[in-house]
Length: 298
Image (cartoon, rainbow, N blue to C red; front, side, top):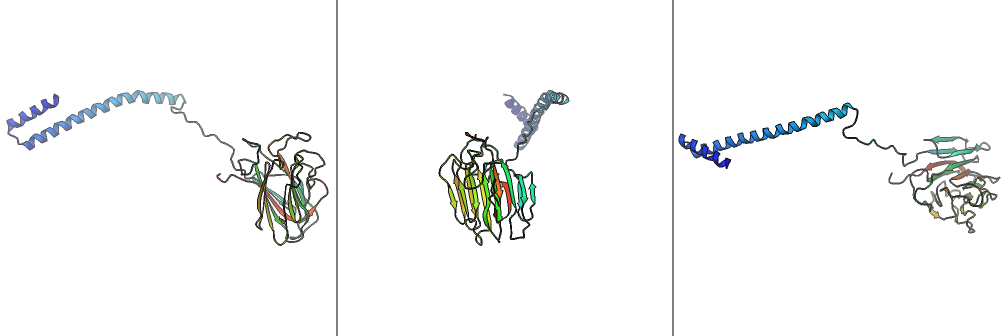
């Protein structure tokens, strides 16, 4: 009704002055624009009146030292990937730890002096594992934390013989699945030239579980890499070997109780050019690097 009134007023005004149709359109446009401007101005005034109390409230809250929109701070978590490394030199006898290391040295590299080819110094290390979060099964794939250990061995181009390495989860492992009956969980991985053998713990009667024939043979193999985790081992070398073994009688690294003797199991012992305990020795490992394996997606 108001628009009709405006049109009539404009039309009458134009007719009285003898204006043309163009003048009518111009007058209508002018008055419509003016009306629109008035409406917009009114809207902005109302919004401004509503905004002022809100601003005052924000300033009041800020003055009291409280966030108007509280934001939770980021939670700092332990990195998924463990970067610690331990490197043992069986030529000169040195040990190097980086980023906190991956192993505790129980017996420092000792033995007769050797040249580049005669790698015969001996050492024993201990490695502690984190417990698995969701299962107690074979940990075949890398997981966060200290749950899969990688052991890289550089082998001599000279003499190799005897027990080049011995990996076990009993402090008295002495090769061939023996540990003087100190622990029920006493699985081993032996590098007795020229083979590597995986031995079951006392839980199983099947021994050995696996033999990797000629995995250490001279002139064919210069590097060996092994991955150790709960109830799992993977053995590789630079001559094409790459096999894994999952078995309930392999390393117990998830806090399993030792039902008959010993304590809980969360660690392994790594002996180089010797067995963990006892007099069996060997020659041929020049250096060893122990490090933690990270998940591929990290």
